[in-house]
Length: 352
Ligand code: XMP
Image (cartoon, rainbow, N blue to C red; front, side, top):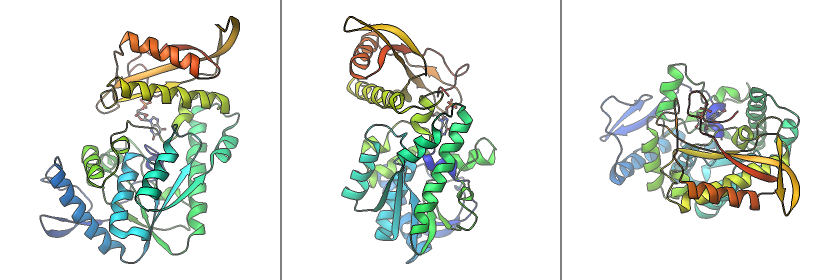
């Protein structure tokens, strides 16, 4: 959950993994300069086969713990490790109450029901929302979410016996970015001092498009593998100011309508990131012939290649009108829909 939750929890560690390339086993903690880009199902299958063997060799009969957010990277790592070590993998899915509609259900369906994973589901929504009550400062909100996530995850880990390894969805751009000092990533160091794990990072040398292809070959659904980026602090940053449960629900419901309509209208997979925001102010409107003092939903839809700059999607006018109609009629407490026309810069992609 931290690009996915896990991504800003865990700091990159330089532990080595082993992998075979062209049949030669070698210690690999960097992507070889001449490594062929994985662009076909055949190359993805070959990578999977190599990594399954490498993980089996690294892990042996030990147990591995994974924070499974449902994001692309941790999901692909989970699928790969299920194939490699089956029930020796313990996945922990923490619902911090800030996930999108249907997300925890999808994680349970795909991993527990379909892939038969050893999955621990922790609904910690109340705990997170209680800690966040009344907190309006954006960075403080992020810190509470990140800190509480580590606590919940560590609590679950302590309940388990004999775990020696921690799997992470580190990918190659994470490593490059942390080396350049752009992002502090992947900190197993975020866990309490006494919790020391050997890291298992089987997609560490892959670019995102390669991770997606590997995930597809491992049988993950497209809705998981090709989903848009989602921030670790989740809907928390789309509910600016102090989060309240009713306004959070308005974010979740309007986001679900936006995703449904973008999918129906061919924009899913075309627009890089799209979501709704519900700021903490109300305005006067009319509903059922009566004055309605309610929230506004802001729609944001942007395109980018690296998230450093972004342009605004030209959403068809008719679709915008339809979205406004659905959101104002279906989401309780909302009487207006606005569109954010701001590119990055001067805006950021998220609102808070
Ligand atoms: P901004 O808002 O900085 O977003 O233009 C750039 C990309 O990063 C995501 N984002 C986050 N991801 N934790 C995350 O894991 C965060 O606190 C966070 N803030 C922004 C955002 O969704 C966009 O894709």
